Image (cartoon, rainbow, N blue to C red):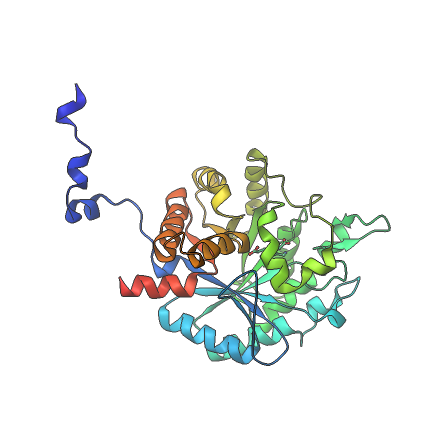
Length: 329
Ligand code: PBG
């Protein structure tokens, strides 16, 4: 008879025993900070992401300095491309003097120890806002897009990116990028594959932030991003990306997909990440701003949930705040 011999509340009675039995913790080593960089001078607020700003390279360096000081291991760069830099062939994506490439060089010059991760996908550079190139019918063509993604990834590696993160969901892109990196001598450039990236409505504020929402219009990404109803397919995506040479895999979005994180971690046991995306940030932030949720407590709890699900790290727009909160204890 379990009760009264077994009383689970016994271990919860005191702080010391609660601490001793705690299975998962969140530390600064788990944080990856996404940042938006733009051409104009200074900073510009992103209305649907209160507290997040688009940054000039100068301002980016200040934010990167704070990240380094707080001990955040890495950031991910998202360039906001001017309309005149967008085209049907997305050629600005591999411009050696493009915004992303200049930002990478500036970051690596100032903060060599800070990991620089770059997004590999064509959506900031295509006039239609899709992640790949289109045929006459408007379908995103896979194999021609791969050639463009390889050029983009190589230009990031040449500028000094430590990790390239393909977020485009084309088939075969990890293998093609790995092969090209090896051939160019970038043997230590890591690949963080957005392996299970869902066709999610939670990306809305991000598309406002990078200005791809207007270009995309009523379009969607259903022919390449995953159907939110699928779990098994995510495992197939991860298996292929690992086989093709991914060093790290990601599930995106985060909170509604933590079951997928758990399955990926259990099945493959590889470095596994999740992206707490812009819509997740906006929800938490809006409720906090209304005084409906305690921001700090809820953000820390949400991120601990990512850890419990099996994440080795989380991309989160809250990273700077979280690092400060963790430091304060
Ligand atoms: C683009 C990209 C997107 C995000 C990261 N890279 C948007 C999309 O696929 O439309 C979303 C991130 C977020 O919502 O925070 N390839």
